[in-house]
Structure formats: C-alpha cells, structure tokens
Image 1 (cartoon, rainbow, N blue to C red):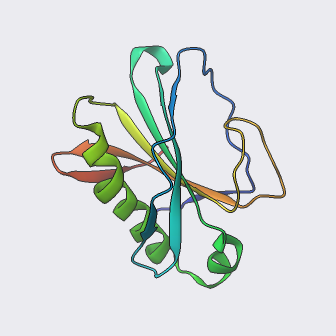
Image 2 (cartoon, rainbow, N blue to C red; image 1 turned 180 degrees about the vertical axis):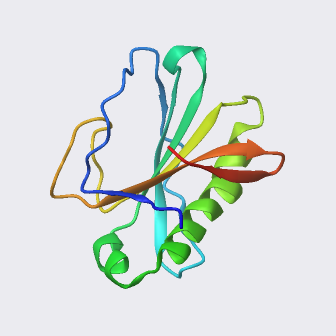
Length: 135
C-alpha cells in the first residue's frame, strides 16, 4: 500500500532561490471526503533544472480528519486537487513534479512548525490526469 508522508509541518528544506510564488485567490473547494479546503499558495521552483509545481491548501479540520480517514480517502482528496485545481493552472508549463499539500493552518514553506498538521503527495502529469509518484 502506498504510504502518505504525514508530517507535523516537517517539510524537507529545499532551496527556494529560484522559486516563484503565487497566491491566486481564496477559492474554497469541496474534496471527495467532504471536507472543505481553501487554496493557499502555489510555488514553482527549479531544483536541479526541473520545474516542481507546489500547490498548498488549507484544511482546518485536518487533524480530526486524519484520525478518521483512510489513506485511500485522503489520497483521493489530494489527487482530486491535483487534477481539478493544479492541472488547469499549469497549461503553459510542464513541471516534472506536482506536489499537493494540505495544512491545518498557514505555514512558511520550508520552515517546520510541529504545531501544524500537514500532509502531501507528489504527482507527475499523465495527460489530463495526475499519476501518483513514490518519493
């Protein structure tokens, strides 16, 4: 079974020297599990010449949901956000990887915050769908 990286805001620190940040809007989205999440920000960075697109969402109910959700339900939410939100916004670019994350509260990217629950998954583009990638 694929395992999700469930973190308490322990993002691996990456170089954001060439990163582009974008806060699009305060769009709220109902994901398949029924929780409502809101778009927080997107980051485009260029680790070792490949583009990585990161889409960060806020999910205030995340700690409670993690206690009750199966991995399949959580992954369905993340895949849904990748396909319905991220892919349409990547029309002009072709990132090597797409990272979708949910966080209980806003955090500064790359700065650990043990008080904030956070989960993420990585995908590659497979036509008009997102293909899960092990990392």
